[in-house]
Length: 144
Image (cartoon, rainbow, N blue to C red; front, side, top):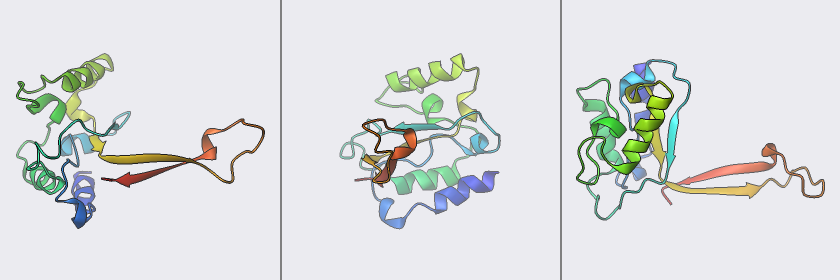
């Protein structure tokens, strides 16, 4: 299944590669198993100006060339000048994985960097205010 990792990296549109952000927060090992869930974060706390060198394109190249098959940004990277895994967000995600009895290196993870728009579906139920989950449409406008 490691082909899936590289295939996903190749699907990132060229115009997004200069933007601040990352594609995956875990390495190929997380995509070789069948974990119980996929960790998807919303709007990373990074600053596009302060972290201008941390682009999606750079993330793709690092993902392809990273020597470690099993890595996790939540466990193995330094954020905010703290030791690896030492930022508050990393600590929360690490706590979650321990409580679930899972290794962070085995959980596929990424972030959505952009804007999520939830709009009422015109074909909704229309029954006086009762709304079902299927009555909404979720649209993602990636990276603004």
